[in-house]
Length: 61
Image 1: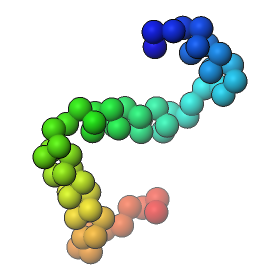
Image 2 (image 1 turned 120 degrees about the vertical axis):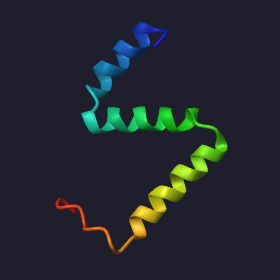
Image 3 (image 1 turned 90 degrees about the vertical axis):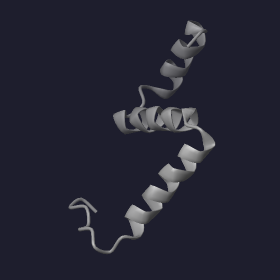
Image 4 (image 1 turned 45 degrees about the horizontal axis):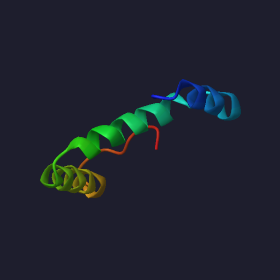
């Protein structure tokens, strides 16, 4: 961040983010860097995986 005071103030007010939050933001940043066509392909892949009945369910779900 360019403004370290702002980042420090946020940290004091909000605390440290969860690691899952940080990972989600990293994935979002990477997704936004993709070309529109690539974004569409990623969304389609995730939708297909989510509706594929032949795949076993995640053990934690």
